[in-house]
Length: 99
Image 1 (cartoon, one colour):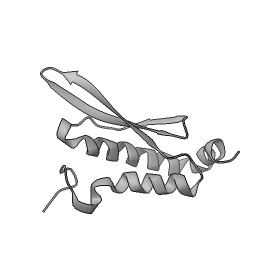
Image 2: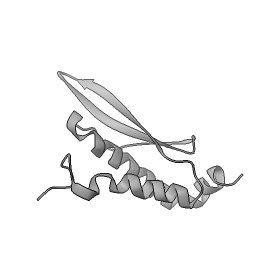
Image 3: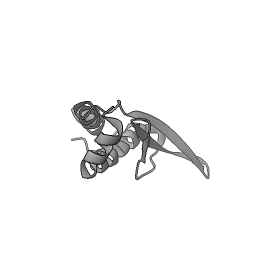
């Protein structure tokens, strides 16, 4: 049985990324753009992600991950972004979706 933090979680491997993409499309926001960032920590490298919405809203993932879990960093950033958009969605939609 795979856990949500495994490198391959079946159909759930991009659940938050898909939900964020759908949210952006629904509110006429540009597609989310994910960036992977790294930080050298001793003899290892930690990986995280940011996501940019409508070229203005840069949201950072909450956690850092081992290299084999980079997709989890993107999922984390997508989850944070979706939560922020849903809390302040009207303001974000007005800023990026109408024009």
